[in-house]
Length: 104
Image (cartoon, rainbow, N blue to C red; front, side):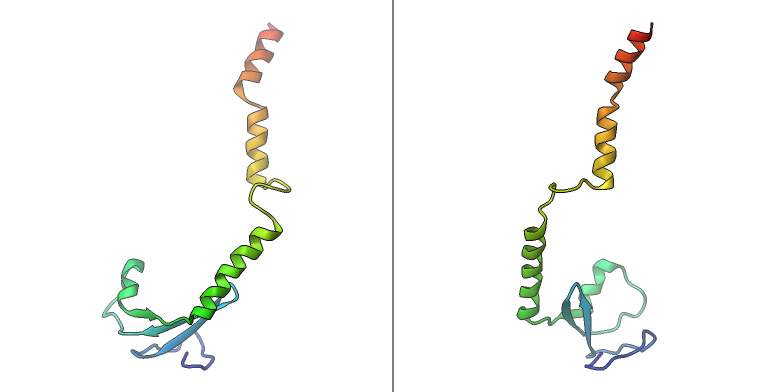
């Protein structure tokens, strides 16, 4: 906050600048005003202004490209969810009906 490291309990005032590091990007937010009471997430944008430099936002785009380069979605080892869907597909009800008919 205002180029200093602070504890989470620090009070925030209007005109404070907050820097947050998320996903290797330093977002900068300026506090315009403090709401009189708690507000929903959709209303927070009324009280803040995003002043993140464009260079930082370009890093976000580069990160997206680098993630796609290493492994495209749907390739490689299946996720746990994918594996369960495959297991359900292989153990579909049609197979069970055929097995029941054979046992009769």
